[in-house]
Image (cartoon, rainbow, N blue to C red; front, top):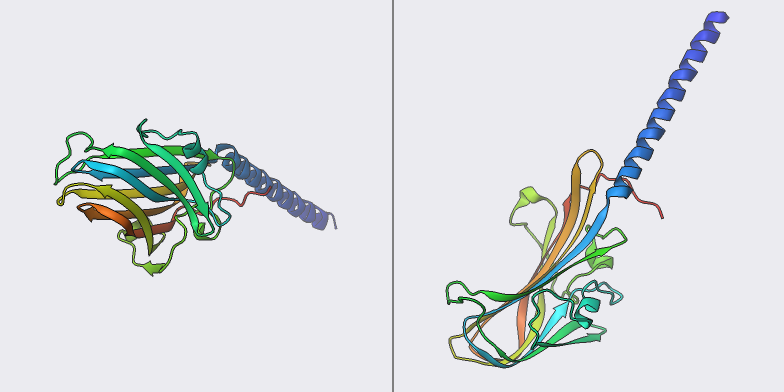
Length: 243
């Protein structure tokens, strides 16, 4: 009987130690994850030309979630965008189809030493940290992308080793300006949503969505923009955060 009691007591002690160890490990992992988690949106919009553009009006989509919330809108409203020239007028316009920024400038000249083979551009950039986990797996459902995304199609990723899923879609940019017939004008915009953390080593996950257009000569209307989105990049073995 004493032997059975000793064995039972030993098993109970082992089970208790295992339970305490697992609980302590779980608490440590969740605490390390929560304490080190940083969620950041990085936005950029590059406008490039190799010739002078005159009387410029642009309507460029702004990334937003399905409720119209955007990490970019507020920063445009107070002109807190790195690289934004002082003589460019910006106006935010929202509708049920999405949000755009209207950019107006009397003249946009080539930036730097622009050539037809390598066009340098005006890069408008910002980073915005948010106090929540960014949805990097399904951003189209509830996070900031270039809406709407007509003709969304899943495609093979150009670099499969980076993981994730890739999609092509179409967007549109309004571009009204006068310039020389051979002018090369491009507009590229991108939003990156990224979560960084460290438990035993640094880890992250992110998504990327972008639009781009290329036009030659002057233009006075809407231009089709190519869209590309890659979601689910990085690690997804972190614990689920509870409110």
